[in-house]
Image (tube, rainbow, N blue to C red; front, side, top):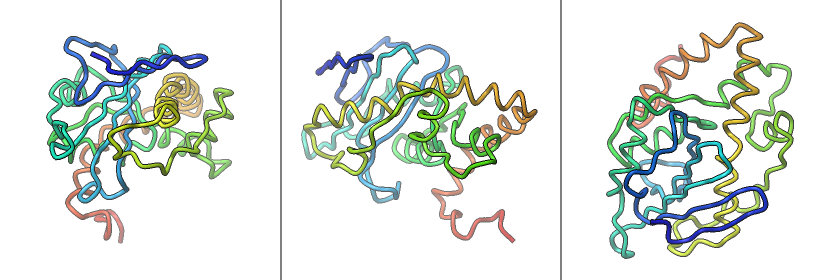
Length: 218
């Protein structure tokens, strides 16, 4: 069960420790984001996974190491949802989040859609493809990034941290709807889908150390 529930102006946040509750379904497409101790999946642990069905509610799963009184990555409900072929995982910069989830849970995280890839395919008139920029320009939401570099490994997360983490998934469905329409308009949806299908393999290559040098480079 949710140990903490926060009510924001336009959203509800449920914080779960260790795993998602039994029987929780978030529908066929779930927005997903992660918070980690750093940007190296081999070194920096996964601390928080955020999920939303796009209905104004966010479910946050805090993963706490055993030495701090938690269960580590023993989260079968969460891992099962991330590996479920019937659930599409909607992410922004999925290359990082998929790698982190695959490293932590030993799964193949698929199928996946990535709003950053979509933006880069159709918004070639700009180099501003960050979630904050896209939400402001396409959804009319101004996200705060104040807590982006805070300590996500602290067993006691602040309400500001929870609100920030939730905001990264609450608007992904709306953002994807805008970007999907642009992909269709510019006849690049099929190309985007091919990129998404390759993402889990691309992340496995990253985890094996093929990020640098990239095997696709000359």
